[in-house]
Image (tube, rainbow, N blue to C red; front, side, top):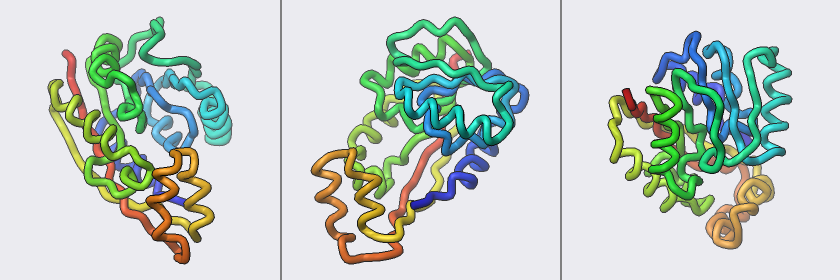
Length: 203
């Protein structure tokens, strides 16, 4: 299974200039997009999934960026971060927040610039992982704030067969498993996805 994460990182870095800045990255665990860490001066990585943070630590060490990263385990909506930054990045997680408006407001209290990097409203992938409604709701929430720049991009997830796709989506539950049934006899599966970037300014 693969998506072109390197291209997604390049798009992120061309969308917003992180060079030399202090970034607070929300939902940063997993490490797929660790490449963006080369640009900022400092990254405070926040995630409530301890295992995902461990994966990020491994990716950071592998990319020789350990001196740049600070790791914070916890729920962004329930913690008081003792740090301010130049920019807050929501790393494919705003749609999962129980209160996206509160999340954005809290982020705006930590940095003047907030970048939302998340599934797109037209993404087929969001449908297959049963996140399409959450994604649409979170972007409607973003639009209630002062969005000064926005861009949509296209990519795809690729899987060698249904078994590999099932391994990826089964954590999303029975509806997701049912939705991918159409791929049961297929190989070299390609599922289009879109993702959006928005810059919200608070100062």
